[in-house]
Amino acid sequence: MDEETGYLPLDIKKVSQLADTRIVGSRFYYYPSTSSTSDLALELAEKGAFDGSIVVTDYQTTGRGSKNRNWVSPPNRNLLFSMILRLGDQHLLSPQMTMMACVAVYELLAVDFKLPAVIKWPNDILVNGRKICGILTETRTRNRQLPYLVSGIGININMSRDDFPEELRHKATSLSIEQGGSILNREEIFAAVLLKLDKWTQELLSKGMEKVLAKWNDASDIVGKLVQVEDGDVTLQGYVSNIDIDGGLLIREISGTTAKILSGEITRID
Image (spheres, rainbow, N blue to C red):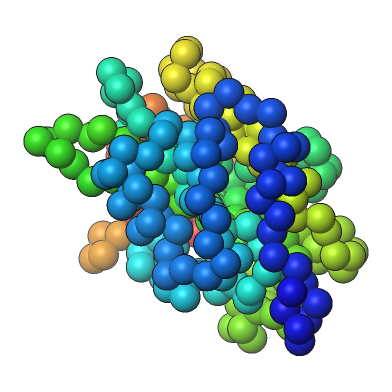
């Protein structure tokens, strides 16, 4: 227990008992504190960790999000974990796994918790316009092949507004904040997340991207909207048509041409 706050470490045994899954959660690697769950997951995957293995911690010293940003999370508050997916003969790309994971977390928040969640391209979940979850998928190639993918997932659970740095308080939120400030059971929520991930992983591996794409586009906050995208020195404006199978953003520019964007900072104009 954190003596100053009273927040308890995760009970991984309880999580494994609650999460009756087929793929995700085949094995758990729990660390009270670590640098990055994704770094450990990549190392474990190289050493042959089982498909669906979960690396989880209560505190990351160098947690990271997209564009090398730090992920801020006090000890014993949130869910910080990485999932290993072995590809076998599956031809999946990192963006496709990110999209699948986004859909799983979105469904938990929007359906189970009845929150006004949306997916923000390319890898965030927002509630009431504030970030509650970030997902980053990574891999290491071997002989130019991708033997596995690792998705790092951070979900803010029991952070109060004061737990966030001042510069993030209007940009980030947590499940506790959105539920009125009560302290939530992380084991039950973690198990629920793993069940959603397992459901959508099976869908992705057995039937492909069709349902994942449909759900992603339904949950997006920008499909059909006028946006501005900035990527380095390039800036363009246009209406978002949809997200394609490899995570690219299809934008119909004001000129009438269609551009495919794979990365960049996006802002809604309307």
